[in-house]
Amino acid sequence: DSAQAHIVFGSPTLAHSDPRREALILVDTLLGGGMSSRLFQRVREELGLAYSVYAFQSFHRDTGMHGVYAGTAPESAEQAVDAIRSELARIAATGISADELAMGKQQLKGQITLSMESVSSRMYRAAAGDLFGEPWLPLDALLAQVDAVTLDGARDVCAAFFQPDRQTVVHLGPA
Image (cartoon, rainbow, N blue to C red; front, side, top):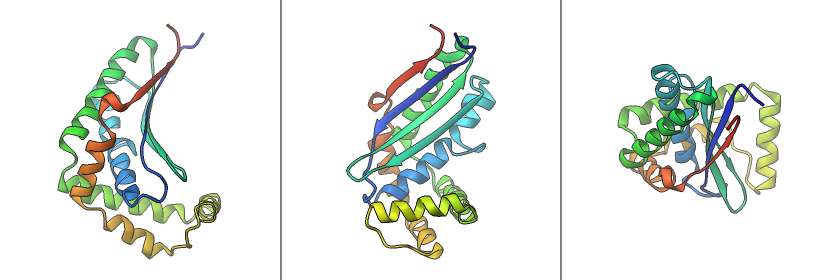
């Protein structure tokens, strides 16, 4: 018994070493990375269908995954699923705009910069570098990787990984 429904969309994406990784992270930021994101604005603010909604990703040696989480009232679950599918379809079909790309870069660079103040974030970054055999990059190099994401690169990632029919959907909550 639960008073809340938990919905997770997920699909396979890129390995950690794939050069499109920064583009995927940037698109995830725009899709569901905060209060200004597409999912937050549409699903929570405009439609009032979720308590929490966000996108996430994880990268591994030979694969990766992208997901969307929503916590909602059970009676709103199907509407929330439909709204998330609609946003995924929209971003897959049209990609992002140049203005969104610029905004996403600024937001992501801000998040990276602020993460450098967290000891645990720095430790996870060092561990990931060691795990994947990557050199330690200074902050300027990380920010340059974000700046190197192009509009075409972001749109390619949108089309390749955000199609609603690529997603597996898991629903936990009352029937």
